[in-house]
Length: 369
Image (cartoon, rainbow, N blue to C red):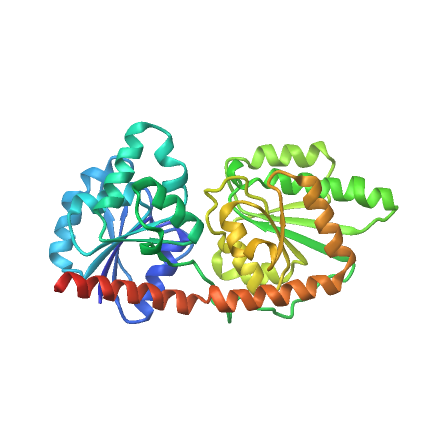
């Protein structure tokens, strides 16, 4: 199969899809706008990269001429745009079929509602596709609302995990430390401040009331525009010895960082957090997760059957659930085992990629009839 992916070169999801599809034998061409170059997460040498000269946002329109030349040269069997907004526009203007759009989250939850013209763009783009894929059922429902498209016709293609790499590992831990962690971009949407407030409430209220002094650490992995504000919050509550900002972590190191944790926090506050890859990765490593009730997290933890779910922004409830897990190590083990089982059944990356390949093949076969 010859596949053209229209996707950001600096997005780990683009990297994973392109690398795995090429590893499975497809000829993969990834086209990205010039201000979204590949960064720390590298593409396989098998993936053929095409930089589109004009940067976003105008590049989503003007680069169509360069893209059409690439299509003429490559002669792909299918084009798959990642994000229905920017790259969805570029794919629509290219006029190639079969054409699949993979929706991601903010493109269907946030972008259409910012202005009327955005809604018109999204509707045009989605309606131009031969088919639509979504990383979660919740996001498929949201997409369906936008264009009155049957949810049952939208393919669910999760960003699963490599269940061999993301598994329980033996790592050296300090026995007297309880490590709580988060891995996310430091932006308001992801609610990291509520994780910090939960840790503060845990230490200075719940544990203080019991007269207990545990050595708790909160490791925050990620970078983003909210970092100065979060550092200020840590200083305000005198948590400098508890909260550690670990910076950005490359994907190939995430599994080991997760295995150092006793509890993982997912603190997002918006439903446009439509999946939560880091949550699934923690679940695969049997690290019990405490997550907010945003759409994507609810789906991943099966409404709280495969993890602990709390009300978004409710840092006190989050602190209380963390305390339960700290006080009951056997509960952490039990939840971890349940989570691992769910990941194997629903979010096995190799099975997820095979499903995507089947979608491609079905669309290619239909277009040739």
